[in-house]
Length: 300
Image 1 (cartoon, rainbow, N blue to C red):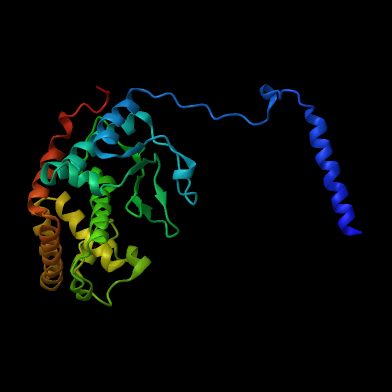
Image 2: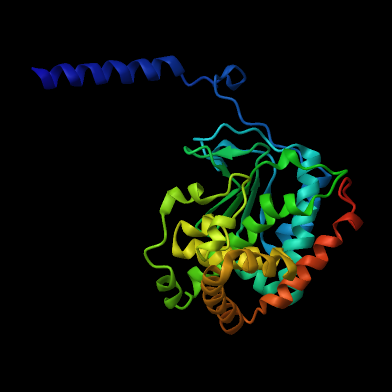
């Protein structure tokens, strides 16, 4: 009996569907489903194709997309002018620094294939600001873009919010391709504290407490692989004077640990990838100083 009822209902539904059509043309102009309008390319889109997509195979996304964004954060889009500004700075200071030292093929082979800009900061559950995220070496998301000031180039701010993050994430990609010496992980074994790393940050946001324990940043204390890439990010974005000052403030014990770990980092980058971190730092610092010479407000 149950089978007969179901069969009858299916027949009725099928008949209704056929009857509604009657082989007439469907009036699509009154459909409840609408096509998403195509976004017209502007001068900036064409500039990104020429400077990111064609030479490096990078999709540079400055229009915030839900599918590309982390839904657990409350975020706002990056402003157009700030996106133009940051895209030019990233190209000059970060990508072209590696290109100058290691060649375009190196950058094209290992750089993340998607850059995504977000206008506002993002905060995790502990209230700590997220400076950037990377997904499997394929995408880098940079936050807080709308805080950029085209009239005041603050190198420390650029390093903190963007370039330390980008060197950090790029170093992750490299060691995931070819791993570093595992003896690095054993130097501070038992001292890594996971997500509680922010508790080791100084009250003013500095890293003096971490230095004294043998770490270049508080975030380095989260786990060994983060420690490894933080050494690269901090070294190439800061001057020799900064590094020496850090070692002095770390004290004899802290400096000894930092130096022991950095020797492994330096050797890895040189022997595995042919990158001399001293040379890379010189290029990065020089290019940082050249930022005011860039035309950051218009598209050529």
